[in-house]
Length: 373
Ligand SMILES: Nc1ncnc2c1ncn2[C@@H]1O[C@H](COP(=O)(O)OP(=O)(O)O)[C@@H](O)[C@H]1O
Ligand SMILES: [Mg+2]
Image (cartoon, rainbow, N blue to C red; front, side, top):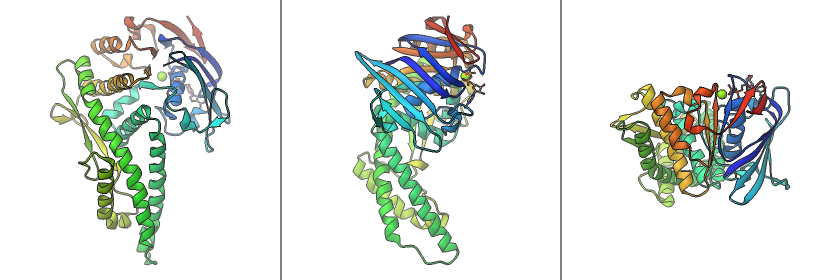
């Protein structure tokens, strides 16, 4: 698929902007702080309902404005669709498809698909487990948009279960009446149900993406691998069927319960898991060099692209300011790998940062104006 038109209202630094787009490569070039990333961040938001830079919506709304609107005309084969999201920080966001009546924001997932490369990706390798969980879960949702519902169920149940555990912990400390455990049993069931589904998808994704990541790493840094992705669950999860994973989670919750009541927080489940990224025999985190970590992060994104493309609807590739970070060899390799993409959106501070194979349409971005050059 590709985006043929992007409109923003009160999104980030833009009060209003209309950007016509084409298939193929488009580069947004301009000095720092002019609004290049803001444009591609909006495209990414339509695909994931989140930003690659911030975890809440508030900074996405133009300072002083109440809400932001992101709208994109999307073409997939012969099909045209218009998707629109209204961001209302502190209140529910709204969504529309083809100017129809409202749908839930998560109903637009799958219309715009992106694989976004950004300097922030280094955190995939060097950062906390949460970064890697988000990587997995966003990709799971891109593969299968209904997983957005499972993720939000899981988050909701987890929050409620934690509230319950917290009050149990407080009651215990202050010698209050002990809690009715049957309530907790019910929450265990809900948590394990959604958790097992998420876990099954993560394990399947890792098995599928592993050879793709290894191939991508070899292309970016020949002879530097191999890379291996190893899931590190907080509860044992050898089995891969959803029913087995459910049983294992239930058993792990039962075992952890005493400790959970002491600490007032849920200690097992997908929200506590990690993905270990191995380079050769060692974990990349803590061992890989800066350059290796970069290659690893890029390999994960390239693998995501291969996967989504192989499974049908080709995503938009977004490369936000990544070429300036790379040495010339990796820069050329990455450029060659992404160049054939159906739509590639690149941002760069100067023309020279855009590799030659990525020649295409150029826009100059300056003080909030976006002009084709
Ligand atoms: N919510 C907002 N309201 C107004 N301006 C914003 C908002 N968020 C970011 N900006 C401005 O956008 C600019 C950064 O834009 P960005 O797209 O990140 O720049 P770059 O061209 O370097 O990628 C900064 O000047 C910042 O002050
Ligand atoms: Mg930027």
